[in-house]
Length: 182
Image (cartoon, rainbow, N blue to C red; front, side):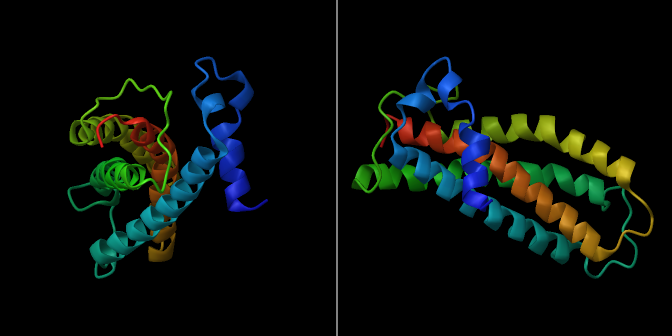
């Protein structure tokens, strides 16, 4: 199964059962746009997560789980930044594409998120960080062993960055496609 078909199955599996009808009313163009941008953003977020983990930990002799310079502490800013940039940057890019006519707006889209894109980005980033970072840290603390290699740490950080972007990007894009402010 290709990554795009996997994304399609994950994000649109409730297509026929969506109670508010928002996903049902989406054009195929909207669905394709959301899937493509989610896949791109997730890969970029995963790669950037690996890059920043490399920047932080490549010169460290031993990486601790806990402490201010520990791996667990890095999940909080990683979650916040990935979420913030996914909502903010893709929101502005999508608005620009809608304004230029290269992407159709989502006419019937509804969102309970704030209308102001900067407030929306900060709100989503704070909520996702409060919910996701402790879960990730808990899972990491269970799986942690003192002999984790740098490549294992890069894999964990890259996978986590990828998954955070996969989780927030579709909603961020649907909301941006429906924004009334261009």
